Length: 167
Ligand SMILES: [Zn+2]
Image (tube, rainbow, N blue to C red):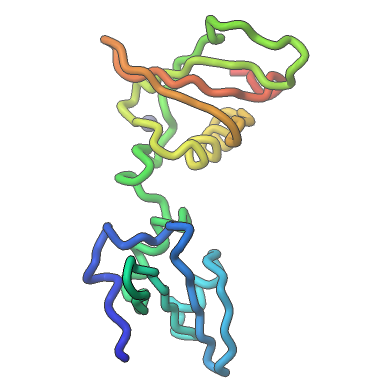
């Protein structure tokens, strides 16, 4: 059976679904199941081929990952403004301590963040990585975070390691 084209499915292809199983077939025939940058680099260099099994309701389908760019964006190997809501620039961040009760013994502090640059936080992991680079913040990426929209745009409630919050 010929594998189908993931590129033909476009952005709806479930690149990061838990049920999507990747199969990387190396030149020597051995098979791995990684989805990391190394996989991307090998496939891009033509050293291996990447397939994905998309389990359907009635049967599973085999797809060839033929849109590597989309694959890389979905897995965060390449930055994707559309998926993350975040441009690749220095964000204009306004923040205040959250009004709610803070646990003084927690190494983390709750803050409210607004982005004046027009970005939206759709991926906390990507925003956390950008803030680590831009401000040295250690944003908690496990556990709850939220957003609320007001007249001045969206406000995000995040938790940041207290000691890293200097600017
Ligand atoms: Zn921004």
